[in-house]
Length: 274
Image (cartoon, rainbow, N blue to C red; front, side):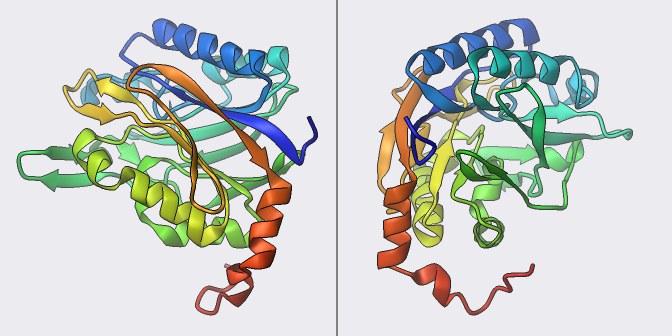
């Protein structure tokens, strides 16, 4: 299959506080995706470790570091692009970055994105989380040109901020990754709508790999990992379990969508130089 048409995958997990167990599960699903010819595989947010907030600093790692080295070996072995969901990254201070890392088929880190928007939300009786208590925000959008197309990186709560996705698109993004741990109440209300909206308004493929089930904090994540095409159609949708989903990325189809409905050429209120 060419770099114009190829298979991509999203892995859905229920990660816990055991890094070894989490990595083993992720590795098995990535290998399964590769057996189905996937050339780009996306893991969920905090796929490597989820535990108590007060243990996050201890769980954080340097990047590059032991886990990204292991991801690199896996990407090299399987000859794929591998998006390492997100990993808690040491930043030299009291708080960690929530960092998404893309590795190429040679096992090299080719892009690193630190989650910009932190989930500080208190919905009475449903969700109460303050990521900023233990995590530091990033400050820059990240895109990387690859033979599979230009890939833009985002993480979970970023999904609610369309200006980030427009910036990625104006920088050339054709595929945008959304590793997530979307909570059940907000996911049931908004997850699919937001994914489809970001795909439609930017005419991009969106690959969203979500956590599922109850995490160590007691919060339940929504699952429903998806791959959405540039017309806004979900072309893969995960069942209610740990799994991997696959879909074809067709850049010729995307080019046709952008040509026939040329809304990206009509953008007026966002500078293409931002």
